[in-house]
Image 1: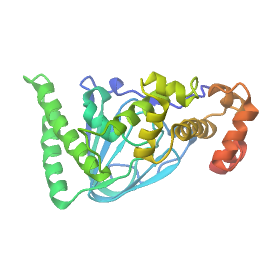
Image 2 (image 1 turned 90 degrees about the vertical axis):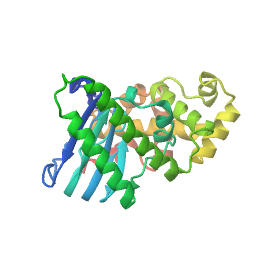
Image 3 (image 1 turned 120 degrees about the vertical axis):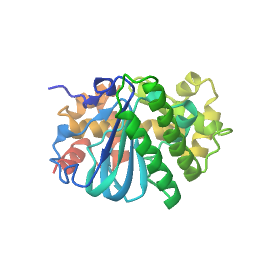
Image 4 (image 1 turned 180 degrees about the vertical axis):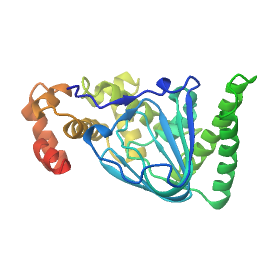
Length: 286
């Protein structure tokens, strides 16, 4: 059996880097079968705008509650299940990462903690809904019309700017001068790619062309924790994903994550999680 968590690729579903849907009450199933293989990653961003109703989403073992008038996004690589809902009206957008400007990504990816839903004001929700209604109309027009992709992408950029602006104020970031936030995002992306082979804070600092002390200072400023903390957190999160969503043994998972000494890996897992890998698997698969 393939131990890897399934990855959904946006290019398999669209050629313009965007998939856009409007959902109405009863469009989505209220109860899903929580089979292990029902969870997946995406290679793209996903945005949800809930106008009415409530919903919930399980992301990396965290239950996120969504309420009426809220905005939420899922980052590439985060493991999640399909949204559950109760009488929801709203919008869903899947967006190729390449279509999201770096200054917006600096905001969406500024923290290493799980992102939180943003609650629109009545004015913000009305403006966002008007824009998405226009985008939806253009998106569903004949794609052979002149400038079809240009128009759709321009409207998408407007939505992304609104979303980034909301979270920028929400997080208290300064997009023009927030070097620590930019460095945090760069570290996060590098960590996801290299965590199996690179465990040293000094190596990450070298790869990012900064000193280890400055990288530590930047991460503490934006997240409250140093580099070593996030290295262990990311590795342990991936270990939990594999324990829950695959049938690999603890020893196989340790080797998969770059630990030749699986007993050392087990000690770190217990220290951070408060239980052994076997205990974690048994508890979460009940």
